[in-house]
Image (cartoon, rainbow, N blue to C red; front, side, top):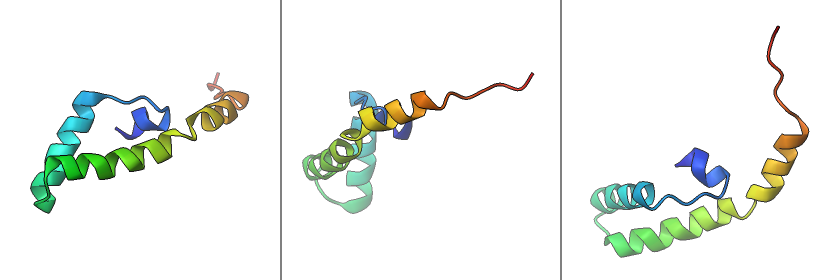
Length: 64
């Protein structure tokens, strides 16, 4: 999930699994957990373009 959201890629299957686990652990409804998670993921994902642009300016070099 972290690798995907870092790039602002939403994967429904991963999110649904996480929501189910969060709901089970918290006792809250899956819908409430989804709403909370969606806010967090949206907030993180919104900065993806800037992060990826910065990373692209500093490519990783492999040892020779």
